[in-house]
Length: 285
Image 1 (tube, helix red, strand yellow):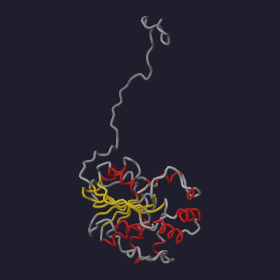
Image 2 (cartoon, one colour; image 1 turned 120 degrees about the vertical axis):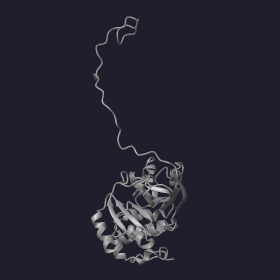
Image 3 (cartoon, one colour; image 1 turned 60 degrees about the horizontal axis):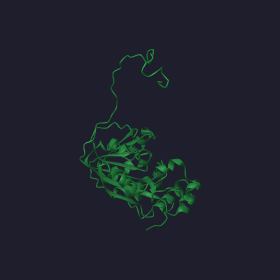
Image 4 (cartoon, one colour; image 1 turned 180 degrees about the vertical axis):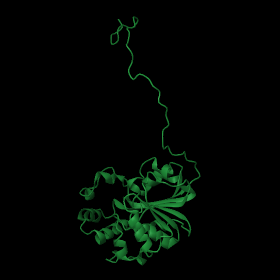
C-alpha cells in the first residue's frame, strides 16, 4: 500500500479512484476531502446495482456522482445547494454521463422528491452540515424505499469530545462541534427505528488520507495541516455509516399550519372590583 500518494493522487488503497485523471479531480475540488476516495470507501459497504436510482446528496461539483454512475451503472440525482448545476452539467456531459446523472440545486432540508423514489441515498463529505438535527432522518428517509440504503461518510471523530484537544486548538472553530464519532451516528440513527444501522466505523489511517489531500490541493492551509499532523489520528478521521430503511411508516411532513382567524378584542374590558376579593392588586382584606 502506498503510504503517501504523490501529486498524481495514486494510492493502492483506492484502485477505482486511480482510474480518474488527477487534473479532472483537482478541477472539481469542492471541500476538504477527496470525494472519490470517500465515495469508493463508502460504496465498498453498499450493494449498488445497475439501474438503481441514487441520490448523491450534497454532491459538491458532482465528481462523486460521475464516479457512482461509471463504477456501478446507477442513475444519479446530483443535488447540491451551494454549487452551480449548470457547471455540474458541463462536467457530467464531458464525462459522457448526462443521460444518467441529473444535476439539481436543492436544499437538503426541502427536497423535491416523491416518497420512496430512491433505492439509495448517499452523502459524501456534507452530511454534518444538516444531518445532526434530531428530526432530519425522518425528513430524508421518506424519499427512500423500504429496504433501501442510506449511507454517509465524511470528516468525523474517533471518539466524542468534551473539550478541544490541545493539538487542535489553533484550528478548531465553534462550527466544528458538528463532527461526531461513528458510534454517535449509530446511536443517533438506530434509536429512531427508521433505519437499521449495518456499518458504523472509521477509516483506517483516515487522518493520513485527510493530510494527503490537503497537501495535494491546499498546501497553504497550514493551520489545518498542522492540526491533523499533530493529532495523528487520535481525534480526527473519516467516519462511515451505512443503514437500511425499515418499513416504519412516517408521518407526512408538516408544510403548513391551517388556522381560521376569529375576531376578538385584543385587550380586556374595564375591570370592576370584586367586593369579596378587594380591588384589583389589593390583598382582599
